Length: 159
Image 1 (cartoon, rainbow, N blue to C red):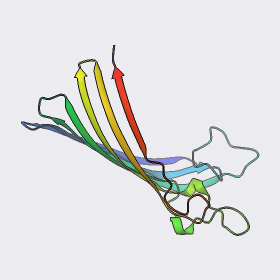
Image 2: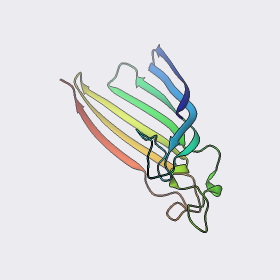
Image 3: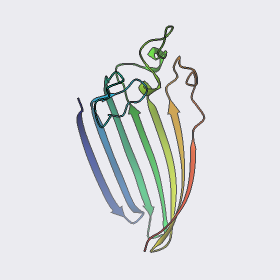
């Protein structure tokens, strides 16, 4: 089964300091997946067990366009918990010394900071740094937060 419930909200206000936007979405529900993968398969797998997990996730942006300048700053917070019925300390890994939970059950949170410069109407530069945190578990490789922060530098040209 795939049962999803969600809500999305958007609010924007213009002042002499610029335009501030708050945007977010929350989703929860039940989703089928496999032992090592929480995404729903396109069809029922014949060679592997199917696991039904309760999940939730959300993201929220706070975006501010500074005055009438070409500068914009943003903060984004998000999380995805593919299995809300367990926490990191409960996830020991599949196998004889573990339990039936794997890396597919680990919750992730992320905080992103972004600066955007609108050089011209059709050209913009974006600098983004995402700080990603995973639950600590008993699974090898996830006994502490892994080093997976991401710096993205992007130039976009629209034509």
